[in-house]
Figure 1: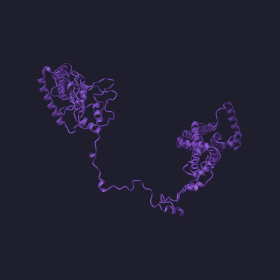
Figure 2 (figure 1 turned 180 degrees about the vertical axis):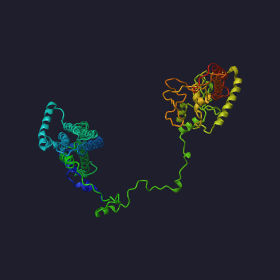
Figure 3 (figure 1 turned 90 degrees about the vertical axis):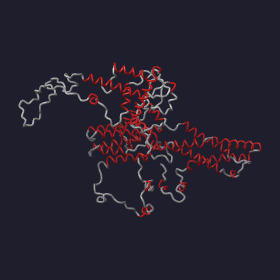
Figure 4 (figure 1 turned 180 degrees about the horizontal axis):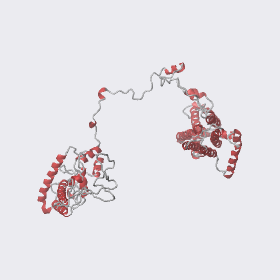
Length: 634
């Protein structure tokens, strides 16, 4: 059984509480190491006596050479690292094995709460389910623990102990004959699940959710038993255990020679007893013995788990929950603090009050004693905080114009740092397609380069003034350039990209244009006489009586007839077609807007030669022949 000393170290006073544990023998390091230490000292003194009394001068010289060699190279063995890591793995495995041991208490509570019936059959069902559960864990213990195996070596002993019936033993024996390779510890869990299903059919379990809960608990219990078998089958790799064992024993074999006292030794203390060599052996070999005793905690060592006590405890607690205390509880009475709702403090005994007298306050959080000065408690203006760069770029996209720039390849580098340019991005050669300067790609590039030099103080009036100045400047330069300017590609700005640019620059408070903004309200057409619906008409109208089904409007269809809406685009008697006039007006507006957009996008610099006039003429001719379709019109 595990040696417990928790009560002795509950309170630490004076020189400490661990010193009192050094006098224990059961489960102590002395009990594990004393035999190995006696053998080590016997061999050590045998070699020492041989050197001092049996060897001649030549033999002593050879002995001293071996001692020096072992002392110099014995420290090359990485004993501390290998042994420390191995013991850490074994300790973790030891605790995981204990947490994997299943206890039937939660399942017993579920069975007692969900399997109803005070009659004999209900009682038999509850007790049989828990007996099968205890049988499962007991069979698991017999396969991994020598203690339990010695207690129940065969199925006959389980029958005699009351965990198994004779008929159930025959079923297991027959299964073992048919399938001898695998263990049958899971078979009682299958029987328990069948009993739960039968109880549901008989109405002793009142809902399917309770059945699912019980089946899940049974599967969890079986899984923990399987995990114990896995710990027993899959151990720490043998090669690692061998490395640790060889490292420890080879180190102390070299120590037997390397720490011997010779004539030319500096210290004469080891002449009589090797003090520090003995302590070193005590610690390292004791460390190895700890790993040996904990690697399988189901054995007969002092610190192994008391599995026989668990077998008895599981069966007794299970029967107590599902039978003795089934649907039984004390009388419901008012508690002592019924009128006070809750007690201010529970009373102390005289012994407890003496210990609690030193604790006058309740536990406080770590920031309870931090005080902020009154002048530092004022809230700061949120606008004084640093603005996120990404938010700044988003604001610039909403307030500032998106412009385009085009230039020949020779002026590409010179325009990059120009301060007079209206473009936000850099210019591109005219041989390539012209990108949008304030596009998403340009925005991301500026964000990652932390370019925060953009001026956010421009308003809409300044933008319009700059655009008009740029337009006038472009018209003057177009007259001077003439035929010497260079032709630009026709597809300078795509129509969709242009309309997207205009839409993106619209302020948030502006409403999006719709058909009514473009065409205006249409004039009404002539009224059309609509026949009344016969199914809903009232042949004898009475204006003084409320009619829950009044006649439908003239614009609604009736009797399956198809009628048109009274709203039309134009009248048939108009002198001029309104659609043609609006189309011409729209073409003129788009031509004017195209010129303005071109003037915005062209950043004129000294020495540039571009055939912008030809571009405008070509665009004007294209607009006059086949005006582009507006993206606002579906």
